Image 1 (tube, rainbow, N blue to C red):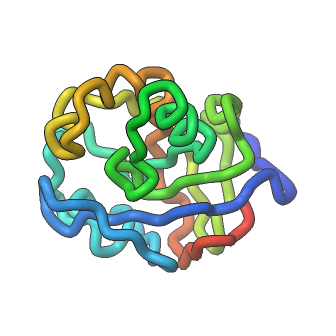
Image 2: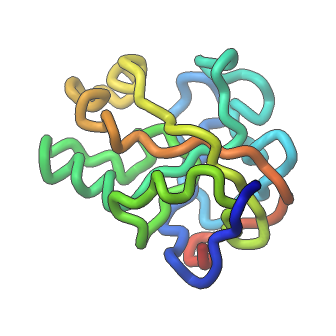
Length: 156
């Protein structure tokens, strides 16, 4: 049985897509979440680097991105963390969303597992130490339950 997270627990701080495998992430003010993921993202088209272990939509906490910068000096707020949706307001409690139905904008997602970083993220970001800095901060993989638009500033 799943549970639905209620109320305005957080907000969307950033949205990113990478149009091709290995391409730099592109910041968006609005995206369309469709059954296969984030429209315009490489994984939605089946072109991701780790396609066998792909996630439809990936989330990361803004607080985790800030913690990486504080601990290492590596600033990945430009999307080099390789996650689609940056959420503010969850801090270290992102794991609390696992198995819940989470409304983000008009889309309904279900976080199913942690999304640990891989060493490839360091190559793409050009930042040695990024994978270890993101360990236990890498975010979550989500299934799409209901497609819909999501915009920066939307409630979670």
